[in-house]
Amino acid sequence: MSRRIPTPAARRPQSGFTLVELMISMVLGLFVVLALLTLLINVNRNNSEMTKTNRVIENGRFSIQMLESDISHAGFWAGFLPLFDDLTATGMPADVPRDEAGPPAVTAVPDPCADWAALAANPAAMAVYKSNLLGIAVQAYEIPAVVPSPTVPVCASRVTAPQPGSDVLFVRHVETCAVGEAGCAGFANNELYFQMAQCGNAMPTPAYALEQYTAGTVDALLPHRVRGANCAAGAFAPRHKFVSSLYYVRRFAVADGDNVPTLMRADFSCASGTCGFGAPQALIEGIESFRVELGIDNRSDSGALLTTETFNVSPAGIVIASAPYAGATLPSGQAATVTWSSPTTLTSPINRGDGNPDTYRHCTTASPCSALELVNAVAVKLYVLARGESATAGYTDAKTYCMTGSCATAADRVGPFSDGYKRHLFTQTIRLVNVSNRRETP
Image 1 (cartoon, rainbow, N blue to C red):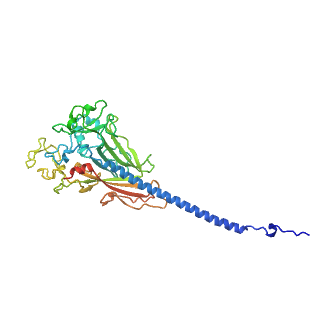
Image 2 (image 1 turned 120 degrees about the horizontal axis):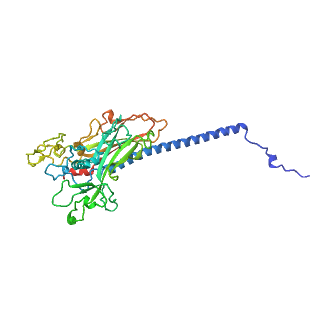
Image 3 (image 1 turned 90 degrees about the vertical axis):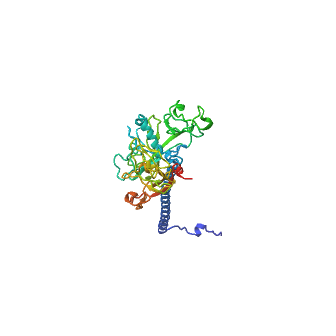
C-alpha cells in the first residue's frame, strides 16, 4: 500500500493580516506619508522664502550697480574743464551757474524739463541754460511722504505715480566714446552732441559746442578743429553724445494698484526734433524706496567754509582791488562765493576744495539744494530699499529703515510697515570721479 505525501499547503495552513493588523499598518503608513508630505511642504516653503530673499538681494544689488555705473560718469565732458574748476584760472569764471532773466527765465539750478523750444528762441537764455547744465552734473529732489500735485518741483509730467517718501535723481554727462570710434554709435538725427574746442591760439567762449545734429550738416554743426597737425580744414575735434537720465520709484510695475513698486528711468533725447525726457521705462521691480544724499565739498583748500552769499551787483560790476586779482571784475548777478571763499579779495583757494565731501545733504521740498551745493557735489550716497515680491505668511516687518546718514527725524526713516513683506536696505557711496578729481591739488 502506497503512502500519501502531504502537499505544502496541507502541511501549513493558510494565514494573513487580521483586520486589526491591517488598520494599524494603514495608520502607520498614513503617518509616514504625512511626515513626508510635511517635509516636502517645508522644503518647498523654505525654497520659496530663499528665492524671495535672493530676489530682494539681487534686485537691491543690481539697482546699486546700475545707478553707480551712471553716477560715476557724472560730469564727464570729454576733457572740457569748467572755468570755475580750473586750477590755472586767474580771473573770474564766466560759467558759474547763474540766473538769466529771459524770457524764458533761466535759473542757476536748471530745470531739467525746461521748454527747449522756448529756450532755442532766445540764444542768450539757451547759452546760460547749457552752461548751467554742464556746471551741475547731478540734481536731486524729494517726493514727499504725502504726495502733492504736482508731485515734484520739476518734470511732473515724467515723474508719474511716484512712490511717496522717495527721491528723484538727475545725472548728466556725455558718452565716454566719441562718434566714429570702434564700438560707438554714429550720429543720430536731431540728437544733442558735445564737442570741446581744441585748436587755435585763443580759447573761444564758451570753449565747447553743445548742439543738435542734423543729417548732412555735421561739418557746419560743430566747427572746432582738433589740436596739432590736424587743425587743417576738414579735421574735427571728437564729438560725444549728450546723456541725461532721470531716476525715480513708481508705486506700481504694470498697472496702478498692482502693489509692485518699481525703479524707473527716463532718458533725455532729441530724436523727435524736440529735446526732452522720454516716457519712463521700468528697470527693476521690488524697489520700494530710493533716496539720495549729496556729498558737498564746501571747504576751501585753506580750510575756510564757503558761504552762500550772492552778490547781485550793477551791470558795470565790482572791480577787485586786492592782489593777485587786481582789476578782475565781478560780473552782474553772479554768485562769486560759489567759486571762492573770499569773494571780495579772491584769496585762497583758486580751486574750491580738495575733492572730498565735507558734509552730506538730502535735498528736500522744505529745503531744496542750492546751486552752490549742487556745483560743489563730489559724491552721491544712495539708499535703496528693496522689498519682496509677495508677502510671507506668519511674518511681520516691524523694522525701521534709516534713509539718511543722520536718521535724526521721522522724515529720515521709513517704516515700520507692519506687513508680511521682507525688506533689505542697501547703501553705497559713489564718488563723482570727474568732478572730484578736478579739485585735487597736486
